[in-house]
Length: 204
Image (tube, rainbow, N blue to C red):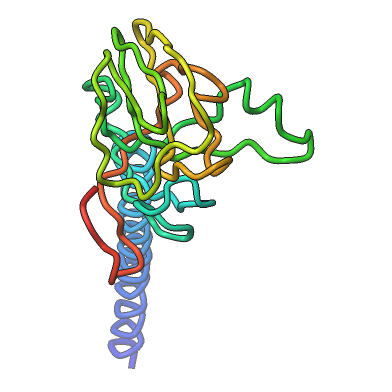
């Protein structure tokens, strides 16, 4: 009889280490999953902050090129590699001068505009047309001459750009004609694609 009692005690003793080992395995598996999730979140944050993100078009200042509600894929990495060029569509922070013109209760927001002149350029509007360095600029993306009257000439200094909205109808765009040249440090990124709606998806 004592033989059988001894055998039962041995099985119970072996079961305890097995449960401990299973608990440790489960803990390790949960920790591995947690690490994977944290790494994935870190990658998402880095990509969103420094590489690409999405921006939604608000307002009509970029009609007819961009329409309100469209989603843009924005290349943020390009701002660390090169300065904006003429023709680029950029996402930028509101300049201080424009902020001062807004009611105090409105939120700070981003703008989407087209770069029309860069460092070293002289830009002006005359008789409804845009001129850069004395040459009339052909702008197939607009559907109207400049209706807000003449402006300039304005010299664009080092580290600066002059931006305008593609909508050239009267009072349609708050841009460098209102707030002047802006530093390239305000540029958040370059719009590369229209991603949504799908029927409007296109490279810019």
